[in-house]
Length: 481
Length: 79
Image 1 (cartoon, rainbow over the protein chains, first blue to last red):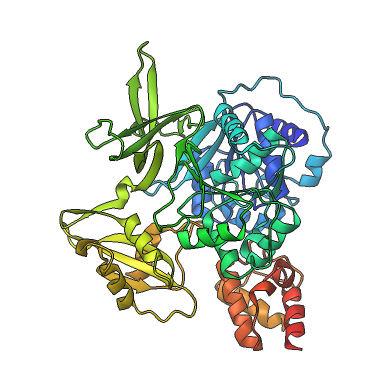
Image 2 (cartoon, each protein chain N blue to C red; image 1 turned 180 degrees about the horizontal axis):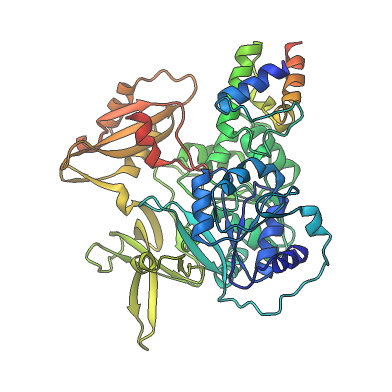
């Protein structure tokens, strides 16, 4: 970390400069993150699996001059630098290119202690993570050392993380779930096992890794666990060291969650919720085996965090009423990079008695509070009106998933004319299932009001997914239409 | 057998790129030559082409990290 920081300083990197990290899941990611932070710069993870044009966009949007990578990414790097960008130096390559290069071997030959001639404060920028914006252009979410450290403190406390823990990190570094493995673990003195890309491809290898490394805390999207379950990989694995399963990013289909909880009674399952703009803001430790198919609540607001639930008129709602969740917290982002307009739009402001401004982040998520527990009801923009009726698409998906043959489901609105839209669905069936499209429609008709039943339903082999395994809803429409 | 698999990876997973060279001992997974969807297609191809059935517990890094490893696995399974 010191050696890399020294090299970065040598390459002209100073406080506040953005440095890109273009790495697959590997040990170098940890060195890169801490080396960049140590020199006072801001790290920007760039997904090596993303299209070249998106990587180029991030490089120019953040004015990145130095990129940390690895020779295994050579093929993509060649394409990235084929078009002119601000990029001047790539760390992790041996050969000379049109940009300066520096191998990891050279980095490791540097002095093992380095301090930059300036100080880094908690309020300084630490990292920018990009997410897909609803308008198409990715948005850079800026986090400070304070928000990162607050996350580490709050999670360490909430999950009682100690130096005895072994954290299984499944997420790539451009996905905020990874901050547990990269920030919380070092903060608590625990060990993080970085799951390699290869292990994420093979459920059997992943299962073996969790058992062999005696992972005590596992945090991933539900899909990683579901794949192991479906392939029968977990049948003989007790995973006796596992004390926490944290999942986030999307809902865990209840039937799989139930099976896993039955199999691992020694493990506590926690539903983690929070948009990347606030990292995490609620938690729900599932107290017992779910008896119904109702979605798991997102739970309680965690420490150092304030919240409001407001309706469309901007008024606070009562218990049991639906509204949008607003969050003001220690882990809140500083704003969107290079986009103060979007930052302003994302905030809801109030003044306290002293006239101090309180800025809440508008999550865009609809929730309902019942006895101090928050329930997630879907995205604000995931709610559509069909013939005047309000339909919650997430609810239709949940009903589809209760069917025994349904493995995964996605429900989305399709506009058929200016004023008319209809609901359509795409479904992946379990292997060996013989259900036809019509059987599933008939099934839904017994569960839902007529206006909420999809007009069209298609069976597909797989869904387009993001690199973190989430269903890419925008792309599904193209798949079925 | 090596060449059949390499040809499939280049033709089917990389659209027949002519500048791509893959050796039997190249790490296909670390360098992103084969992604998860691609690996599923590749395993399907291997099952059809070499008339074997790959059991879920055999779908591991050890058996599929390189073309060489796949060849060893296929030969063992066939016997």
